[in-house]
Image 1: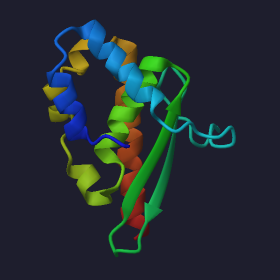
Image 2: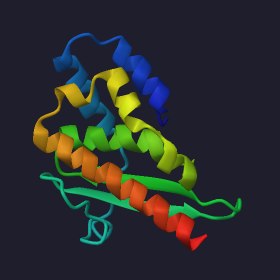
Image 3: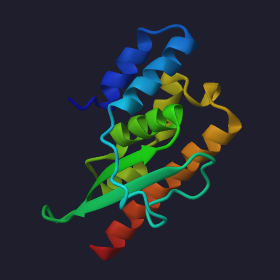
Length: 142
């Protein structure tokens, strides 16, 4: 069962200790379907992350507006959990919704940015920029 971002926010609200929250983030990453070796390519690699992060974008134009589905993976446990949280926000959304979404507000609700190292925060920003770039490309192609 895939959790929505609302489910994740609610679950975070029940966890007070950040050590426990980190464990929950790692657990979310474990639930991600791993990418194949072929998908873990330079083409799918997110640039700007210290850990290796891969992001696969798929665009569905059947409804007239591009809808993007994302799959991702990482070689680091906490980062893989951050990938899972990010995908729960963006995957299955229309491209224009992706571009207008204020994800920082969501991260503030769970206190995420305040508890990330600068390297992880930069990597998260790189992943968010990659998702928005993919959404822009999908809109241009539509």
